[in-house]
Length: 280
Image (cartoon, rainbow, N blue to C red; front, side, top):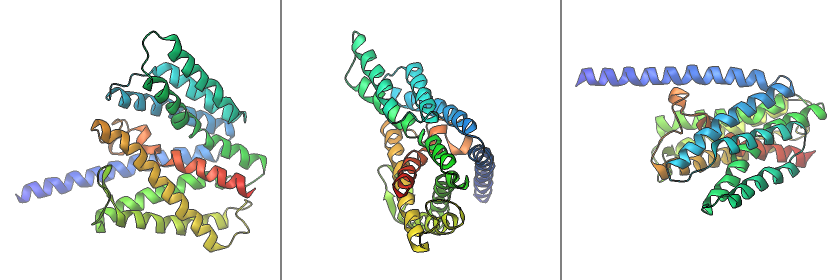
């Protein structure tokens, strides 16, 4: 029995080490991309969209929902490209129309195919494209490039704090039917750290539309975005639980799949973009 405990502890330690190493590597790569030119962000976003779209369509396939992988992937990349040229949201009508027309052209198409196809374009094309739109906005207004990195930093800190404190002190399940490992204690810890980061980060990121806002107001922004990020995580978990899988893939080892790494960001980035747009 003691040897089993030692082996279990060693496995857990290795799991955490792998998680930290993979997370650090991804963080550095994305950090460098976000602070670089618009073209680099667009390419990185498009690449991630391709991988996440493949994983999501494979996930839907487990529920007998068969979508055209290549058609949706090409259309999602086109949406990211449209964001680079500031053609959104108007351009979104075109790829959705393509999906609907393709469904009509097929002899035997179930109604859920075009519905899920259109959803895939919004969820994995339009939502992540807001990172490119945010970069365009920051460059066009001569705001601090650090503003673009903020929703990513906040989401990752929110997730990490929720995971760590959920493991340490978590006792009450947040949403046991959707995500059994998430706890209310972890959720609250995530919001606390999000509020602190937001108050400090947005106060120091100058110039930006947040420069003149009081600290307490910036903290509230962090709480709001932290809550939205958690909702994004739970939203993706619904699909995984529906087909009985833990991760969309094992491409990133203990971090799961590419979609698993951006599920929270898919909600947080658009929310932050429209907040910035509103304040400006």
